[in-house]
Length: 139
Image (cartoon, rainbow, N blue to C red; front, side):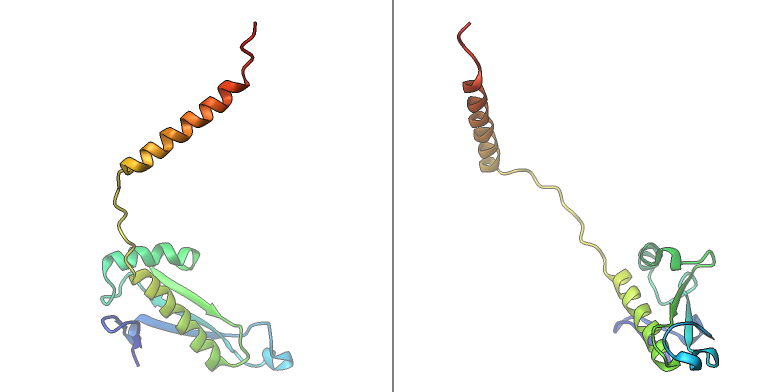
């Protein structure tokens, strides 16, 4: 079952690898018997479904979760059930990829307006007069 990110982007099953492992945390003695923690690996560098610019942003956003082999590793162990941990890991991956797909707005340089320049110069002159009045003129 493919993982739907947006209407245009879907992650195929072969790009995702899930491993289950034992972990500490909630569960009491049951936690020592069952592998509930999920390690989700997404082969982002090899993914044909992500644009190149999104891959670059994903690498930056993933930080230490990005491996040398170009995989994003997400570990989920907050819940007592394996199913809820799987859902948690997948939802976190979806959020991360959606954030990488958002192109940042391009900042355009603007010139200060004439009125703002005049306000700045007026404030400077007012401050200058205040400081000039502090000086001792009688010597």
